[in-house]
Length: 131
Image (cartoon, rainbow, N blue to C red; front, side):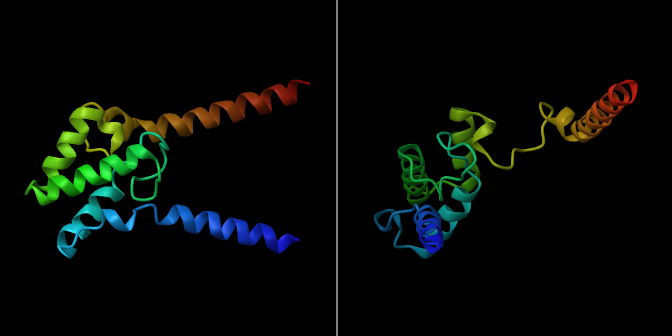
């Protein structure tokens, strides 16, 4: 009985791991590699925590096809990423660029998070000690 769960889990993971359909592959292996590298850094806005290479949503498929069309059209990786960011915002990138908008998050975010954890722990322990 327990092996059925393992089989289901294996099939589920395997089906999502290869969301790129064979009809989407480019004949040129260099362009296909570039498309795969770009797709790995582009977030599926439907799935949100999955790149478009792993997602089987219609949005991901459309973006994968768009990227391949642009590569065949001669556009650079940077131009394609810039277009996607201009259309969908920096959230579409898994690794957003370091800019003046997110400098606060990169520089002070970890310290604020750690300080918050310490304060919550301190207040929790203080309330337990008072009872």
